[in-house]
Length: 298
Image (tube, rainbow, N blue to C red; front, side):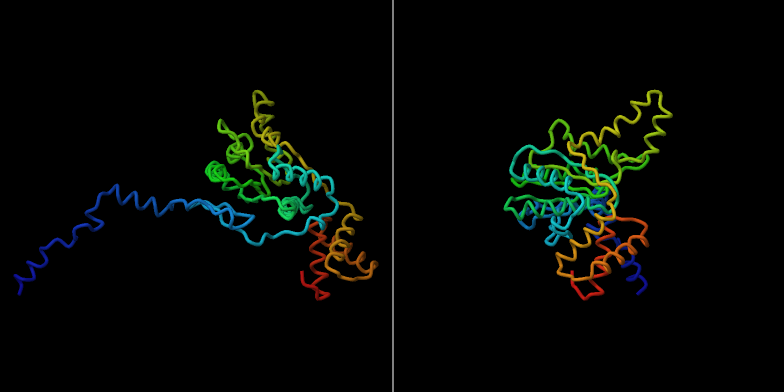
């Protein structure tokens, strides 16, 4: 029995083709594939009018219900609304149009305007796709443009709350959209971004680099000039109290919510005082509270 057992144990426990006998380079390649999955197939742009761009693996996920409000409910930003809508209509019709930077006060409807204008253009019968890109995914923008370039559809690339901090190199990737390098930006792609900063970078960063550089004007030219590459600059500024109250009155009318004007005014002013700010976002937050108390579904 001992001899038989010894003979059995003398056999190689590693079977042919197991992980220990395989080529180390083959195992490394498989590990890398698990870490970075292969990109998906060609996207189906007929699946929806809006998409989210994701990486690892690269893919465009359709969004069948976009979180947005009607264009008519965006009050107090009439000039920006009209300019962006006209620019988007030109692009959707196949004509020349500019990239747009929507910058300014928080909560004044920058991102809401982009989504509402897209919906309005689609409702007019024009085919237009909205593709949202996260700021941290900007380094992959070249691969995304490769997908869009080969399509017959027209696309608005949209990046919300775009800004760059100290030592942030993502802004260099954005130039692929705005300038396109030697290939050029695809004719069927336009870029809209929203930001609280006009120059997309902190003011103290600009001043520090100017103060410490041998040539102050050259130190920040590359970064500051990024915003110059947007053909449209649309500024959004804090609203007045009358504009704030008009926004809420517009929401009440759109949702058939009846309330005494004096009560509405008193509650709305108290609400914005507790928030320490007036904006379209604060107006909508008050109206949401009001609608809930009145049993109105939004």
